[in-house]
Structures are given as C-alpha cells and as structure tokens.
Image 1: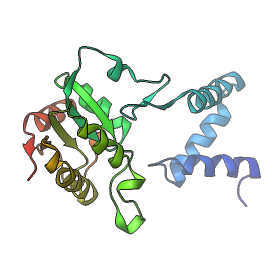
Image 2: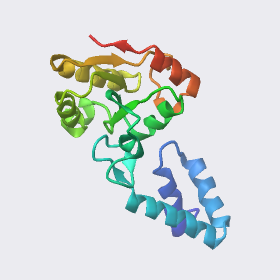
Image 3: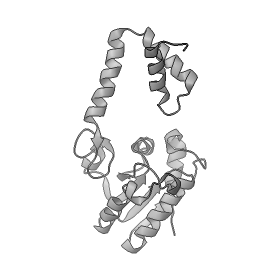
Image 4: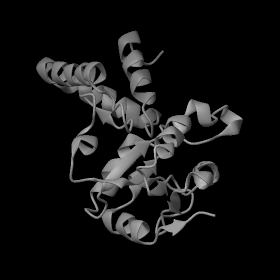
Length: 199
C-alpha cells in the first residue's frame, strides 16, 4: 500500500463523486490534507448541513429547505406551463436563460429498463396525477437528448395524450447524447425557443 489507510480512505471517498478519476481524487485528497483544520471543518460542516436540511419540494421535487421551493412559491410563475426535467440541477440551467416563466417538475432520473428504472422508480405517476387536475395546459419535456431522455419524453407524451395537455419537447441546440448540465445559456435559450410538440 502506497498511502496510509486514512489517505487511501480519503482518496476512495473522492472517487465516489461523479467525474472524479483516480488522479483527481489523489490531488483533492492531498489538497485537503494541506488545508488548515478549520477550513476542512467548514467544508465538512457544509456537506453535513446540506445533507441534513435539503429535501425535495412537495410539489415539483426540486431541492429546497422548505416544504415548497422558491419557484413553486412564486405567484408570478405561470402555473399553466410545466417544464419536466431529469434532475434538479437542470432547473438552474434553464433559469439562467431568463426566458422561462412557468413551473417545473423533477423526475430524478430517466427511464432505463436495463437498469430496472421504470415509471414508478421516477416521479412519472405523480406528474400524470398533477396533469389530470387540468391546471397545466402545456408541458415542455426537457430531458437529456440521449436514448434514455428520449424514451422518457416519449413515454410521458404518450401517457399525457388523453389528458388534453399540449406536450412539447425542447428543440435541439443541444448536442445529442449530452447532458443539460453542461449547456451554456445561449444554447439552452435556443433549445427552449425551438421546442416542438411530441406526437
């Protein structure tokens, strides 16, 4: 073993984070070890505090510290327009465009039969229940432009078809196979403008 057990555990902990390979994990571990104890305690405290306080919005499943997220609480938002995204972080990409004024719904994933992820593992039944109430007139599906995102969009469109709701898919100024998380504001803005109806 090259590193002490404590250093090895720290490296392995960083490797669990998405996009962090072995070399980056080592760099992060050694950087943390070079920090002052108070700085490390501040980071650890922020992680624990966020994990303790942050939960899902009871209406849209965005991440929040209250029962409803700030977007759901905002009376200026258009309740007849609903944008469906895969992950809560996708909301921030869309919000940065400054163009979207409706509400959101976070699925927390995409359909993937090979991984055992069906509609019930996501929030799709809750979404359809919201649509049945009749307040939403247009749904914009902003799932990632890859096989799972497309399958999820198609499934939602098929399920919503009898509910008298207009279902649109964001236009693709986004690269196929990519994630919304990495889209810049201009690309995301164009994708929203170029949305199209599904089916």
